[in-house]
Every structure is written in C-alpha cells, then in structure tokens.
Length: 170
Image (cartoon, rainbow, N blue to C red; front, side, top):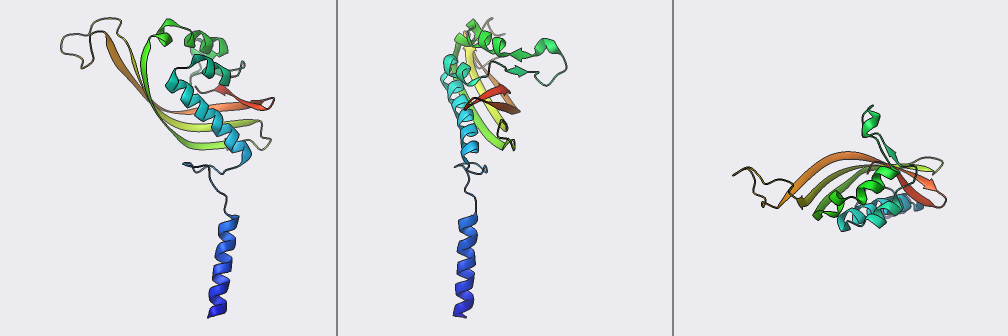
C-alpha cells in the first residue's frame, strides 16, 4: 500500500514538473518566443488605450499591409496609411478610448520568424460629433458621441532583426 501510494505521488509530481506553464491569464505556453510576441500585443493594447501614436507606429512594420478581408485594393491599408491615420485630425479628436481585448489563440511559426494572434476586441471611442443629433435620437451630448466596434481579428507579426513587428491586423 505504501509503495503504491509512493509510486502515485512520484508519478504525479513528475507529470506536474513536465507540464508547460502558460503565460499568466492565457492558454499560451510560456516560452521566450511566445512571451516576446505577446509582449508586442500588450504594448499595442496599451498604445491604443493611451492614444499614443508614436508608440503605436513603433510597433508597426514599414512593410505593414492589411487587405481588410476584401479583394478590393482600394480599402487596403499600408504603413503610410496607418501613419496618416494616427496623425489625422480624426485621431487627434478622439476624446476617450475604452478597450477590452481577449487573446483567443496564438502561434509562432516553426522557424520563429512569423506569428499569428487571434483576438477578440471591443473598442469604444468618444469623439466630436460632426452634426447635431436628431431630436430624441441619442443619449450622447450634442457635441460628442460614443462609437463602439467589436470584432474578432487576426494580427500577423514578423521578426525584423531581433524585434517583432506588426505586419497586419491592427
């Protein structure tokens, strides 16, 4: 009986010691590459919350290209498009940002040069109203309004030198 109990305890502790720990708050294995990739995502979230255009641009590759899920090239966004947006009056006129992000899945390619993050987000933006609301149509003020967007999105990252950069999926 004691030998059986001792064997069970030993095998249980062996299984526990072999289990891969996950990055806190995720189901993502805690490896150096996974940690480096998810850190870029967390920095992206913080830059969005802080409305920090410089920090956001620092995370984006100059090879950025997002087709926005369509075959229509007119809605594609490249690095210059991202740069133009974060330097626009529309971006500067955002009065408040409320965000919620959940990482649903993440993978790093076997050669550790590309990575994908599948994430859910909800972003609420308070902005200046361009026209007064119709009477009784809004609980927002006459001068500002809240906009909300929710989506599941995929962010692609690529290793450039020793840094991970976002190449699609802002």
